Length: 188
Image (tube, rainbow, N blue to C red; front, side):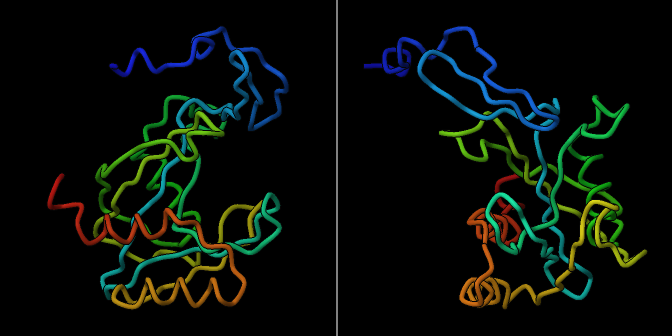
């Protein structure tokens, strides 16, 4: 049996919009319901390591999970007015500086894939920021209250597990991000 034979019969049905909000829409194809971002570019996660070999993490309260979370700097691509054609790399540079106060000389694409393929059509990209320079305190825009953490790279995994034990929500993608920091150059 090939892959095409395994696609559900109703998977190619025309999408029906069940609800459309400012940032998200709920859609249905056949019997399958899923969330879809209303911005055209998906999301980007930034793998950022300071010149002192510290990984940048951000902490913020997330209403959807009702918890403080630890995340890598990240954001939506093309979500600002007039930026519908923004590239993943440009969004990464913008979000890195906005959230952490670090500017980077360049960013490089690492990998992309679905954020939660059973629930959402969103595609997220991992990018690596290079040659970071601190230019401000960061903390996000006026709608955010972000705390920046700089964690020595060799201690980052243990630090995340300690934060989880302290009650923080830790996205499992962070561990993929740490792996990419260590290994991305070997396959890219």
